[in-house]
Image (cartoon, rainbow, N blue to C red; front, side):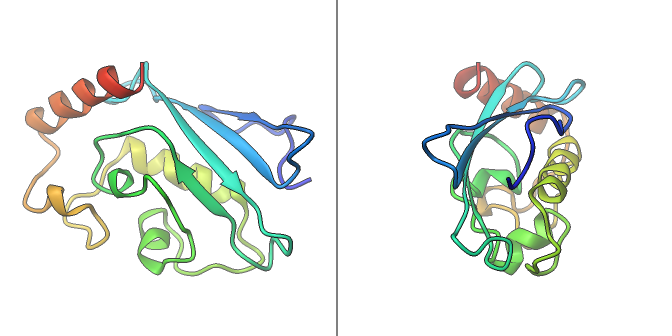
Length: 144
């Protein structure tokens, strides 16, 4: 088993389908005291046959207004830029789903502006009242 349902990750719920052992659905509850609070964000993970030696595919299914995650409506962690955004430089067999999800959680709580990996629409912007309002509006629109 890649990750145990008995091994919780804060703010994430994991759903598995017995008929699809190489896939799982992740549900991120928008963390408290963030513009995403109250939102529900869905991800799918698809594991290759030779995981952990080959990277899994992480797909964000919910629209989100976030400088790094916005562009990740389909995340391919083997892209070095994506790894930079979630705090990892390259894929190795020692990398685990738990580590990446914890890094995503840190990132959603602390968006990084000025990061070369951020979505183009965030260039020149900062974490301010305008950003918070728009992130809350998108959370209401797409994640509730």
